[in-house]
Image 1: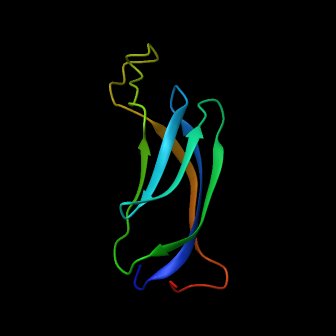
Image 2 (image 1 turned 30 degrees about the horizontal axis):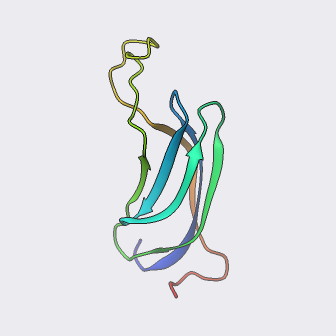
Image 3 (image 1 turned 45 degrees about the vertical axis):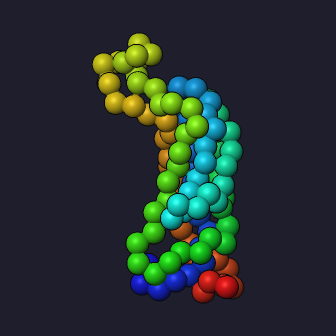
Length: 100
């Protein structure tokens, strides 16, 4: 972002293969935590987050180790997965575009 501001982050997330505990970090600070199911997407809303000017980093960390589709007998894919994320949106917080 060109200038510091407050935003709301919304996303849909599902755990790959098994339920997982997720921790969401913005610029190294935990901003949300939840258990994420593996059978249905969960809508997550994280309101009123302060973005710094410049680059910001959102990390979703799984407490449990990731799984490989190949190891689970799903296919030959040997990559590791924890979550599937969809419908990510970042919007200015209503009535408050600047950090407090």
